[in-house]
Image (cartoon, rainbow, N blue to C red; front, side):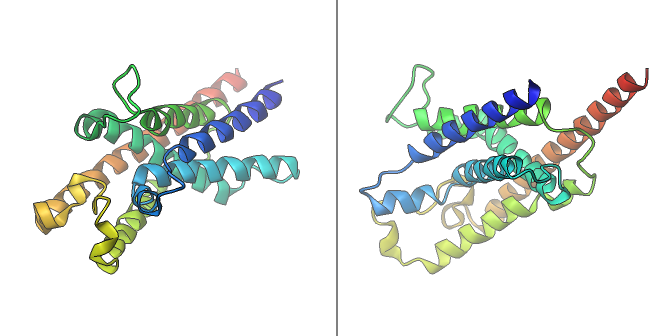
Length: 222
């Protein structure tokens, strides 16, 4: 029964996540679409979607869904989507609220999907379905690879794209990455703060993973 519920839950997640990603785009406007791809939020959502699709495919193919490499990347996706929620909810949304597609909560519908619905569903999938005790303490550091690669790609895009690419859309998706405005020193300070937030999230995730594993082990040994 639990396995059936797990499959249904993940299929629902894939559908909702796909819709949430899709509504970010205007298929008639190439510039807006390119700009949307500059957001870490979108990439963290795509990351979670890919992980869920792979889990579903591996299940139907009868392959191991608990392989070390898959669990590792699911943990990295969990870290990224958790920080997507935390950073948006406690700081960014008060600055970036738009007048378009506002919900009764005062937040654009695409933000509700990307920053609340998808993170909540992905965290619940980890809590409810994933066997605990599979994350490793060294993942605290290695999971930083995803946000660091994003930042590297972001700066590469800013340096390599021509100025006319940004005539109709903002060059910087986040104020704290706008090094032309705030300066390199302040920009890298913000990046350092972000990395500390990610580190803290990674520590909390792995701590609870180990704690829940210990409690489940004690429960089964009684």
